[in-house]
Length: 350
Image 1 (cartoon, helix red, strand yellow):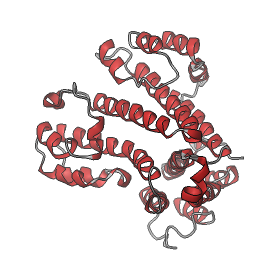
Image 2: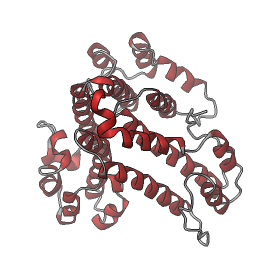
Image 3: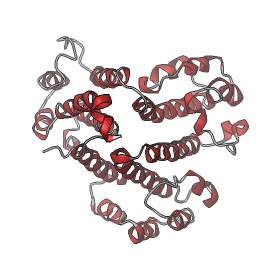
Image 4: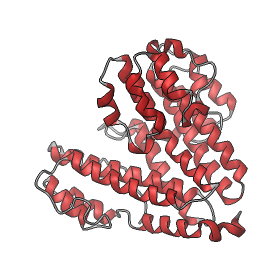
């Protein structure tokens, strides 16, 4: 595929690398952390490659305004790339959207179970996760209607396992539903990238295997002392990670983070994540944060290779993390919790 890569997708790869080069550097984050108000944050952001994303209007500064402007810029860049893509890149970009669709469906299921307003829930859904059938949620009054309206004829229908008891959806933890859909998604995406071959297969299988391990370990830790049986836990673990099946089977039975760490350290060296986690006495850096730091490093390294689709996946991951960081800094300033302002996830560009 590398022989025709520049002809078909060279422009989009170069454009994406340009988008990545315009992301915030360490000095930009230092400027943001020195801001004293949200208006200062907005002015500082407009001094970067984001430009006039707020339209020069700072009359009503808020975290919501900042978050929406950042999200709109990310959407603008993604949709431009997608609108100029051809197969198989078009399908690859759809796979990038699927996690947002799964999150939106999980949000709607949780809202339905708690009798929330569907119109309000739809306004809370991520725009990248919108699909045509999502609008039909307004007619859903129970889990069966939801299944018929969204999951039978929708882009994520392919990730719905046959053994998921949708008739008892109201009695199932929504996080179990999310994890089950995400497992099917990861395994499907992994197989798709492997079939593409070339540098794309090498880069993406590495990234997706790490993502699979991260989810398995996180689920195992969060399931400690819960009512989730080992069999149910194992069903939520993606099988396309670096951790072998024997490690996943072992983690599904453990209710001690120390033993989970020993298993991870024995096979893939993830145990150091737990070591760092335990030494953080202020409790601000979580296990999830450690994985995000490693993920950011891997996604930056993706750009060291050429002629592959991994740059599009990694750019979206890094852009999402950048938005998360700016929102965290903005929240700390808004709530005057400046002692926690440096607890964002650094992106190692410099």
